[in-house]
Image (cartoon, rainbow, N blue to C red; front, side, top):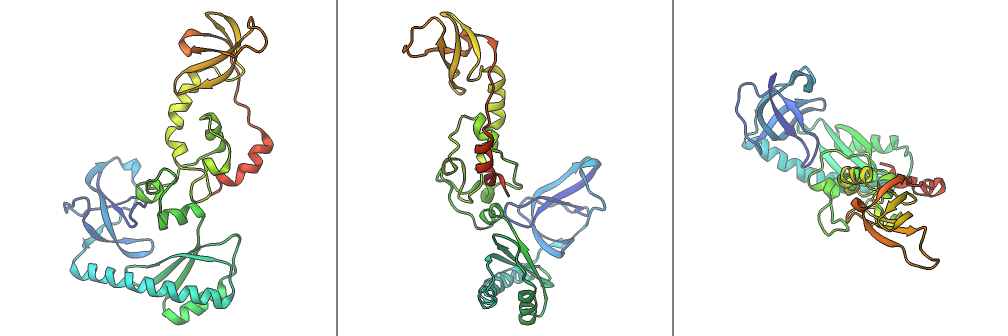
Length: 290
């Protein structure tokens, strides 16, 4: 076991462990630590706690100090510089005729590097742009191409539910989301209905998948052969949430609507399966991309 503090460097970014060096800190405290990028200022997300050694990547970097007033003023000044750097970079992108969309600019705490985040449809040769920016800012320049999910996480906004993006408000890392999840949850596979503002599958599909997977284990699928109180039949419609099945009875005359039964009222004789149309999957594959 080792005592650690968990520090975030972005509002809803990943939490990194550091050695508190026998100092007691509270969630929300601003601290100065050394990272792979150099000296950075972060926010304590996890107060002092003991964690198993297997959860720690050694060597554990020590806390340098609790951020003081000078540090906070320096961060505020960097924020102003970032806004100015954004305008300059956008202008330079236009001058170089590059097909890229600038998303965000970030100064490292020690001002040894400026990071420019951008999106683009494909690869971009930005070597000339980097040289141009380096001559303006007189420091190290790094351009990072990010995906549309990362863009949404950085910029934020409102989802189709009317609430702030999950990725911007509390999600530390993106979870894999697939077309199969949408299919198993009985959703329409229309891209408009299952994709978020970023144009990729909605992250919330992942939240409910565990519950749907459990229900699918206990619920006959469409095409299943079941025995009901009124005889044998084939399941033609399933409502996983309500647990109601619509069954076309073998004994029912042609044209008669399927009968409705609760899952507990039927006995499964042969289960069906969820069909995944290959052509449909291929057409929607881009929704799973990062």
